[in-house]
Image 1 (cartoon, helix red, strand yellow):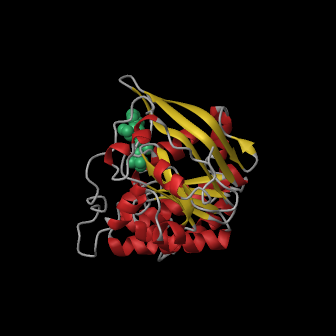
Image 2: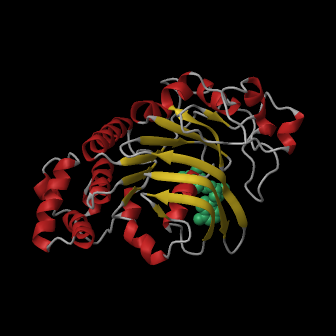
Image 3: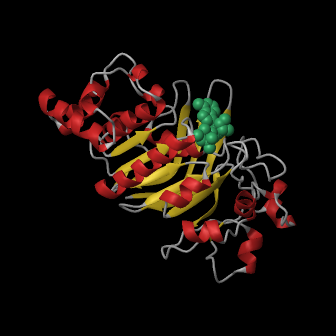
Amino acid sequence: MLEVTDLSIDLFTARAALRPVDGVSYGVAQGETLAIVGESGSGKTVLNFAPLGLMPTGVVADLHGSIVFDGTQLVGMSERALRKIRGSAIGTIFQDPMSALNPALKIGRQVAEVSEMHLGLSARQAEERALDLLKLVGMSDPASRLQQYPHELSGGLRQRAMIAISIAAEPKLLIADEPTTALDVTVQAQIIALLKDLQRRLHMAVVLITHDMGVVASIASRVAVMYAGRIAEYGPVDRVLIEPQHPYTKGLIAALPSEDDEPGSMFRGLPGAPPILGAPLDGCAFAPRCPLSIDRCTTDRPAFVTRSDGAVVVSCHVVNSRNPKEVIYA
Ligand SMILES: Nc1ncnc2c1ncn2[C@@H]1O[C@H](COP(=O)(O)OP(=O)(O)O)[C@@H](O)[C@H]1O
Ligand SMILES: [Mg+2]
């Protein structure tokens, strides 16, 4: 459904030029959930939303590489064509539903609008469908929710409304960017359960951006671990979480907080900080923090070659030289 190959993204703002995504490759099959994990600032949001033309105004994104979605190349596509795909074939969910909902429109109208616009339904049909969608996303008392404004709903209900909007046009791919980060823990679990259920019922491909390994384990079949704009490790969730190979992934998993830690403290175990993303780096971006680093790591960039057999791919000179048979090298 989605095949991303050697994608780099340069961002230009009035103040700076940077490359937050640098040579990333992955794929998502129909009906599959891929989790993308990584520290804040590792490029997850830019990777997923710049190609859809969803960057803030004043930011120019320059894409290199290839993104084939359902047979269509997205790199180089016109803004008009992208707009058509967004909200129809590709649904999007953001961390803060308030930023995506229109505060001045009733929930029912906002959900109905998508079906009118993308499925060509009449206002009346779309309203019926909006009611069905609110039921589908598990809203209590859906008929009266249709008549409410976003500010009248709790955070969890707003996120459910956002999800109803994102699936209204029956997307083939749903991209959810930290959809539960802003919610309380119990509501988080409900929203993840909802996404899982919808994914199965609607047979969508899902890309879920998260920094919660618990969420990765519960919903995704594959995971891409990002570090400083690159993928450090990529493969089936049960292998990557249980037997991480890249030193960064190992550090992440070893540093997982216990139940009583503060939320968001999962990266506390790794000394040092990620590099500032300016010009593309020589060598491995993780080398300065890496316990295994050798000379070559600061001069040569480790290869990252995806494999069709679904094996784990690790972008690391040291790991790959130890397991030459495990990983195909460019
Ligand atoms: N609108 C923007 N303007 C300038 N820089 C940005 C913008 N959005 C993201 N960046 C930069 O791109 C990098 C990656 O950001 P982002 O994709 O938001 O990371 P993540 O989603 O993994 O937290 C960061 O260095 C961030 O500062
Ligand atoms: Mg982000």
